[in-house]
Amino acid sequence: MADLTAHMQALRDELELTTAPNSPDRVLTRARLSLDVLYDDDPDEPEVALGDALIDLVHLARDRGIDFDDATTRAQRTADMETEEWELTDATR
View 1 (spheres, rainbow, N blue to C red):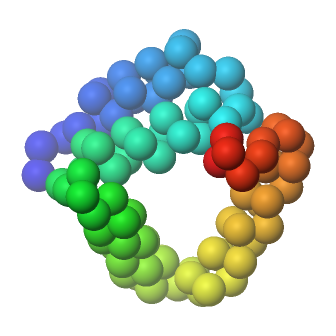
View 2 (view 1 turned 180 degrees about the vertical axis):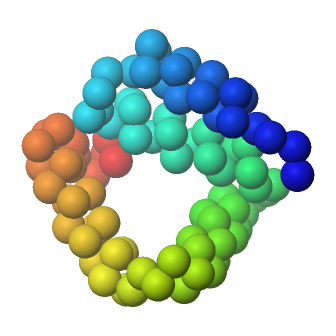
């Protein structure tokens, strides 16, 4: 595989320049970039790309010895706290 380090750094730099730290815009942009760049998203089935990404993350967690269930529990808790902190409603999630 080609060394993509410079390209990945350019994406991170652009994200830093165009979104506020610790903001809904930053987290959604980062997630959308991940899915749009790496997964073939069918507009009629948007959950497929997300499912594929989660499957890949399960494999990565196993490879790194991380308990995926614990990680997703912590992630859900953090997302809930951010939703509250950012005063998002169901309509803006």
